[in-house]
Image (cartoon, one colour):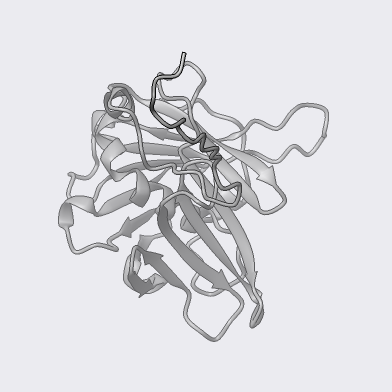
Length: 238
């Protein structure tokens, strides 16, 4: 039946395949899920020859990749490498920070947001078993990494303002690098970063600081401890 109204045009639309996928917009239901109320073991999983994902356990309510890590060579200095961290599952996610280290006469640098500092300005090496991350001016965001045991290569992270020695319940994070598999007869255990509830709000700083501490380099500025370089036996996080 003719209604007397002109026919409405049919408009076909489709998303631009080149448009980046938004990774920083979450439904309201995910807000609480992003802040677990218990310690969570995140796996640093190799994605390709120069990328890595920080993955929560599949049992977590929000089991999406938390961070995307990429490493690229500085074309103007082939002996220096830039490690960049984004939130989410790809480099299109929100930028967190980056650091550049290598064999160079130029000081190593670390960047968060639009602020860049030299490595020596961001990390203080207190001794061979303790390092302080103080990139930001806010003292509540300063972190202290301690070598738990030289034989295990396990690192504990506390707020820098916490007492020493700090009781275990004050730990905000814990890091265990993957041990070397000399025999090649068993699967190499993954690298694990455990974030406790009070460390969730400091995840960006925790991740960037531990990546710097674990970065293999021959630079004289390297904060890489001998125990981590040895990749000792597997231990459980607690």
